[in-house]
Each structure stands twice: as structure tokens, then as C-alpha cells.
Length: 521
Image 1 (cartoon, helix red, strand yellow):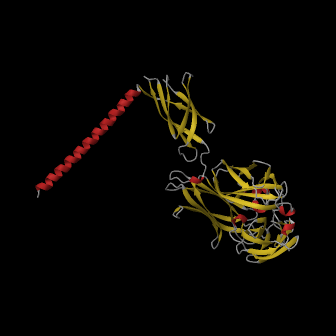
Image 2 (tube, rainbow, N blue to C red):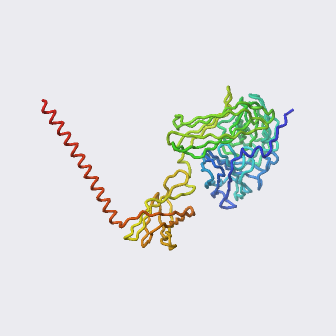
Image 3 (tube, one colour):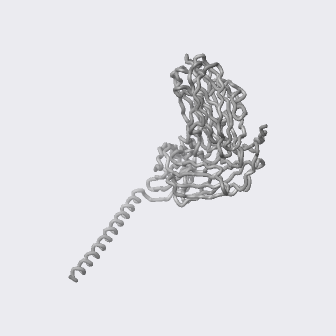
């Protein structure tokens, strides 16, 4: 008899999700073969940590107008195409839009289709969970075509592994053999008599991480309904494992994709979420790494995990250690399934790219490892802009006010290019300005006919980022701009004279030394 799993409450599991949202739009609702489907996917990060290793999973589904969940309760849907866009980055509380396109093949059959999108941020689901078909965002479209693809599909209501239907995780012992049955139904009469290949992969947690297949089984679709029985071996390490099931034709074209899951029972711990505040290191600024540690995914025997060591290590891309720290978690159990940890990261050097690794281990075993590269250049980092004013000078004789205005991005303090509308308000309330200026890092602004005896306000409206800034100016006064220029010329001449004098002195000393040397010969 199978052990019934423990069902955790929603309150206990909200930590495992990354805050944010995903929006999906396509350009049309009906496509003919050969036309290009253009999609825009808007992803927003609602966390105070950067998404440094995000993954967007896009699937084309033939079937229902809406996803069926749990997936094993319906045979309507059939995933016929999947694409994974990896290493997507977002700064804290920022968003970005990704364009994606797909050319409708001529072999597609006419009918109703769906485009599904899912997003994972540093192991934590942001929207949807593709490996259990938990709906993310989706949109419907129709295809007008004369093809007959897909020729077949995997029946979700009958396919099972470890005597459990669908993606429900079946418990198995470490290294044990377990059986599975894949039910395949012909969707077209042309499928009968054709050769296909069943591929089954087993990989930790997420089936898009599968690098190879545990089973490859060629078969002929010799009837309307076919059952393929397989025997598989469970991995030795306790964990939750995704079973990826694909049916492809002899040309490697996918006709059906389905997923199931097993749990290898036993003591372990899992890295559920990793976040870093900024994707760079500075020697004068403390960064922060957030790690969410979860208990064993074995919710059948519910092992208590004690004395788990969580360590965070940062190295250069070449492997030189920059930072390392660790925390001890006394216990993870069904009553305490998550442990959030924060690590304050300091560095003696500036790094714009590095490798971040998180390890979970006991005294004798490594439970989990998660490593990824962080590169500042991978980020669309101008989320916002900030301004500063410098060298505020007022020339009384010319009634001229000069201001150096500089624009920086809000995260990295690096110059940005933008456009600003600038106005000057004098202390008497009068307005001078209306200057539109392109600012590439810094720009000098000049206001004429200004009577700026006291403080005045500089109002800057950024036309790109749609924000307004107000600066209180206290001008440094000069009688004349020409006078100032003359003083600079005198300073330069004085500096040049000083330099010439030093050279003459050095040459004189060298001459004296040479005379002394020659006189001794």
C-alpha cells in the first residue's frame, strides 16, 4: 500500500514562489501555415533581489481553450512544441519585455491551439510551474492549414509511473526499479504503420534540465491505441525527480510531450530560492545574498533533517575565492519546511562578473548544489535615472548662470544618455528656461538674463523616464566670465613657468655632477 502524502497549507508554501508577474500577448488570433506568430512576454520582478538566472518556458499546445489542472484529469491538451529561453536577468523591482516568434509549419493541422508561458527565477516559480503543468499565462489562437500534425498524443488520464497517474509524485526507494506505462493514441489515420521513438528522461526537479534519456524505445504505431510498458531505475539520491516523456517521429519532430514525477524517499534538503541584491560587487558597498532552504521533498515518510550547513561562496569567473560564509540550520521538518537565510557579502575588489554557489550539506553528505554566473553586462540596468548638479556659477557682469547637470542610472551609478527639459526659478518667483537638453553623462546648461543674487531652484523633467527633480542652487559668484578665463590662463602660465624652472634646476644639477666626475679622471 502506498503511503499517503502530507498536504502542506498555502501559508507554508508561499515563500517558495518568487514575487512578480508575467503577461503574454500575440499579434493575431488566426495564422496560416508559413505565417509568423509574434509574441511579447512582459516579465516583472517584484522582489528586492535581482533575477540572475531566470528561465522562460514557452509551449505550443494543441487542445483545450484553457489548461486543465491537474493535467492527469484530461486528455484534451497535447504539448507539441517547447522552447526554453535561459539566463534571463532583471534588477530588483524592475521589468523587461521579451520578443518571441514562431513560424507556423505547413504540416500543422487546422484547429485550436494555445501558447503557454511559464517563468522560473533562481529555482523559484514566478508564474506557473511547467514541470507539473500548473498554468502560467496562456493565449489562444487558430491555425488555418491542411496538414495532419500531430499524428498522435500521449494520453494523460492513463499514463502512469510507479502506479501513480500523471504528474503525481510516486514514492520509490533509492536505486529501486519501478515500472511505467505510456498510453499513446493516434490522432490521424496516417499515424498507423509509422515508426516513432519514445524517449524518457529522469532529472532532478525540473525536466527542462534533462541532459540525456534513461530510456529510448523505438516503436511502430500499429493500432489506434498503443501501450508501451517500461522499466526504469530510480536515482540513488533522495530528491523529487521529473520524468520527461517525449514521442518523436523518425525525423526527430516532437508529436507529444508529457511529464510525470517520482520522489526518491530519504533524508535530504533542497535549495528553493537564491537572490542577490545587486549583480556586481564593490569594495566599499555591502551586497546581500538571500537563500531559501527547504526540507526534503519526501512528503511520504517526512524525514527530519538536522544540522544542515548552508554555505555561500563567490569566486571570480576563473575560480579565485572572493567571499565565503556559512550558516547552520538545526532542523528542517514537516512543521518547519523552509528556512530563509541572508548573507552580507563584502569584497576587497570591484567585480562586474563572478560565480555564485550555494551548497547544502551534512557532516558526511552534500544534499544540494546550485551555481550560476552573474554578469552585470547581462542586465538591462537603467531602471531609473538620478541627477546631480555641479559647478553652479553665476557671472554678475553678464547676468549668466551656468550649471553642470549629470545623469546616472539608479543602480550602478554609471552615466546614462537621456533627454531633460530644464527650467530655472529665481527667488522672486520668476521663471527662466525651457531648455531641452540631451544629457550624455553630463551637460553644461547656460541661463542668460538671470538676476540670481540668492538661492534659486532648478527643475529637471526627464522626458524618457517621465520623472521630475528639483535642485536648490546656491551659485558661486564671479564678477565676469572673462575675468575667470583670464585667471585660468595666468594659473596655467604660472604652472608652465614652475615646470620650466624645475627642469632648469634638474639640468643644472646634472651638469654639476658631470663636471665633478670628469675632474676626477
